Image (cartoon, rainbow, N blue to C red; front, top):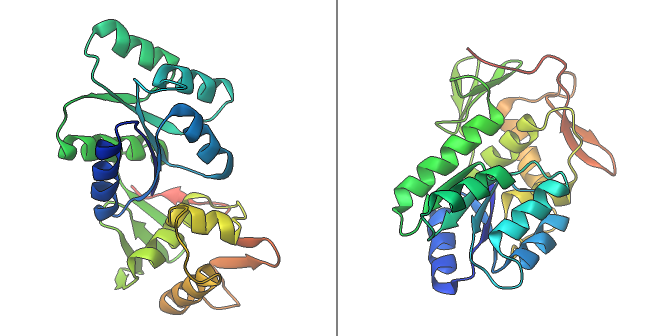
Length: 230
């Protein structure tokens, strides 16, 4: 999962970024609303964690611009303001949830998880079935006909990202930017290597391929009847 943290208090920004990464999130950090818009121009995020009081462009101005430009990304607002009118203003402008400073990190994590559940699945379950492959997104497990397939953390993230965006061709750059933050400077062919490993582990044959290659464009999971398990 890819998060964008927008917080002008540098110590808090750095500590939250570190904790979120320890909890298996990829995180990009911005320090005001204008910086965040620059990240959004080139990145794809699951959740934006947004402070209210910031220089250049505050949180209210940012989310107003975000929704005006028809961005659908989920937004969790961080604010030291506990007045009812401020909370109402944020929600009316398009925020999905808010946390009042100071807060416990575990509560922040719980709210992020809840937002992701609401965004990606309409029912109470958390399993995505793709043919013989099932992704248990709460446990971060991949099963093939009930048997657990051992993937690394990054292999799982790539597979889940493709599965959540079935029928959309995702470029190598887009996958890489989603799985890592923009500071990643690893091998240029890392996505090809991860896809190769995933295919080998799940037994993805050329005759019945789950992950398909669109030459020159990227990778895609084509599914006419993708559904969430009951």
